[in-house]
Image (cartoon, rainbow, N blue to C red; front, side, top):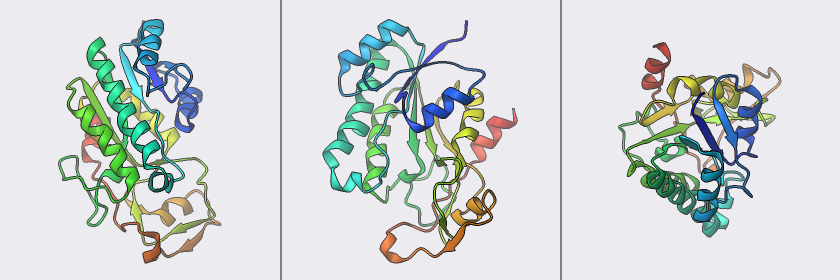
Length: 235
């Protein structure tokens, strides 16, 4: 019998793709009602019920991105305190923890950031996810995935030609997971370094090219170095 992996945020966008596309791993998808990350008793209860060996922590507040500026209390509660609660429960029950973080923890100015580079989030979302990382990194039996993933099909009709990133579809992340879940530490997870426009155009020829301006407040080179990931996938 394969180790059971409890997935928090079981009704989230990524979890739904994982549920439909996974053919290898043994998952239990916990809804917010079953596993309220702000309630330690709720987390303990679902662990007692399902008896997992691993928790994959996907529950998070993400989009719309401006929610993290408008409602910092909600952002702190879910992404920092919720992740800290999950980490404490994993420690108490000796469970492996896999945390879904983001490439937004990097500054996004020079690009090609490796896992060893300093982190300097450029917005509150990145700060909230880094806050979660701080708790997870204190626990040695853990794996942090700094992901740059997006929905398929690409959700917008326009895409920036002067913003470089490592977008990868949710479906591609699902394929990677079985090959990396035994790792510990931090891994950058993403695809080819390219502009958002180049990524989107390869799947939708009708996508319109636009230029990012200063009002967008987004750094231009958000690319991550994925050499570590490539090495793991080649084994």
